[in-house]
Length: 68
Image 1 (cartoon, rainbow, N blue to C red):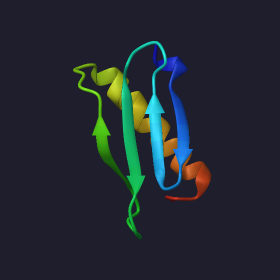
Image 2: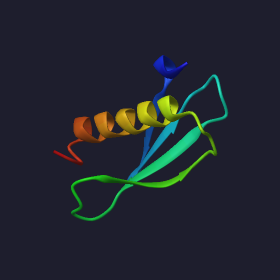
Image 3: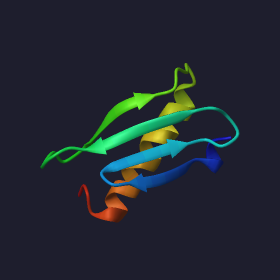
């Protein structure tokens, strides 16, 4: 399941989805903060999915130069 996580960039937002489920998490880079902020996510108790979504968002932010 978590291998299929996708991250889409929309302006200053990172939209993380897991296509096999209805899960979505939206992260934003705010100002000069050295980290992302979770704006909203689908309700879930799946801690593995949440960890993979967060890691995928951070990986994309690093790739984009948003965080170091």
